[in-house]
Length: 431
Ligand SMILES: [Zn+2]
Image 1 (cartoon, helix red, strand yellow):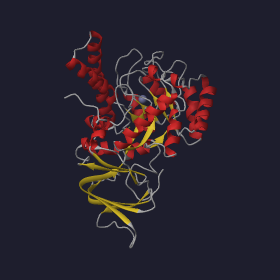
Image 2 (cartoon, helix red, strand yellow):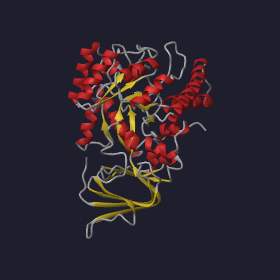
Image 3 (tube, rainbow, N blue to C red):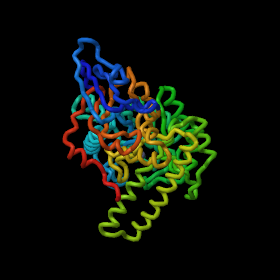
């Protein structure tokens, strides 16, 4: 991380610390070097007498913590290509694409990410490159590679294993390589050789992973696109359920209240990934308008509408139960491109969060879900100075998070280039 020894006093018409209280009018954040020294009303926050302080004032704007995206795929292109094809590209290409994505994401106001599925060592090397100052990107919580069964979802990224001895060994291997948490695919997924409606690992295999990860203080998260995978993950003490799709083994959509209750009892975080499906739906809708759809595409569009509805409804139920749903975009998977994290937060608000809860789902709550809350996620003295300036008030309208005016990473004002180049990153919605 770059350092800056001096003081910065950042003031704005509104301050959201993301701790849960209402915004503070005329707020200020005092930064020294890479960290936050004080937060509060502008009238009460000042640099020490005689100190050399850079004053940055943002009238009419909001100062808040940088966004935290709990679910990324930096290797991806978000152009609809399948993971099976993505994995055929050379690691060097994937690392460069990841660098491009990391930059877009940082410029969009995301200052921390958790990576959910890259190939081989690509993200470790990207993080090394960022630490060397070769390129820029958010703070990174890395899994190395997702752990999969043979032929399982994302097995093509390089970590297929069988049995509790091998799952434990792979966990140790990934930690040795530098993994910060362990990502596991507990059901199949879009991978052609996998079975999305069936669980992949046994509970015994999963337990070997969580036991080993937790021994080293590492969190775990499982990809689950059908209900049995969620139930198995809960049996195995997994810390976050990704996707959390309630589908029975025969493909029917049944919201499993019993499983949802267990998620609540165990305090497990849920990352519903709502927009990745909507982005594919949007792509079909754009094509429908422009040139029409093939019969197969028309069927896919119908399925996408229904799927979006079911997932929103299930998320609504989980929000009403008080479960901990956080923003994790799943970009650049499918048709969803990095730099567009806010679409996911927007759908959590549509599912029932208030705008302020939406803000917390992509800052403080997201940081808790990643075990980063002692470092980032709120504006508080002692935390790293990951700060964004937003034009508008995201605690009233979550869409204000699109209007990023300035990004600070570890106290450093990020040079984001031109407004025009940043605007090209946003994927257009269907109007
Ligand atoms: Zn994903």
